[in-house]
Length: 102
Image (cartoon, rainbow, N blue to C red):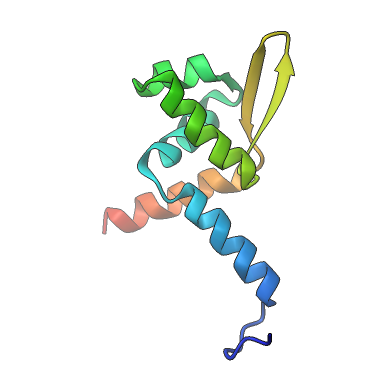
């Protein structure tokens, strides 16, 4: 079905972008993006300790971010290490930070 509005982006791009933005649109997930940007590569333990949240909560939010390709993980023994897929996600935080301060 063809979209009724005109955009330079196709419908697939707009849908995928919306899903990605929904994935980051949560206070804990924004905080995870921030600590990963600062820490670069962290285990779930390092993340939940840095944010003072429970391990299950951190794992839940990391799964959402991973499913929407915001974070990547790699396994090393029994630890999984999480990183931002792109520093551009930290740039989104920087834009928000500037706008919220206005």
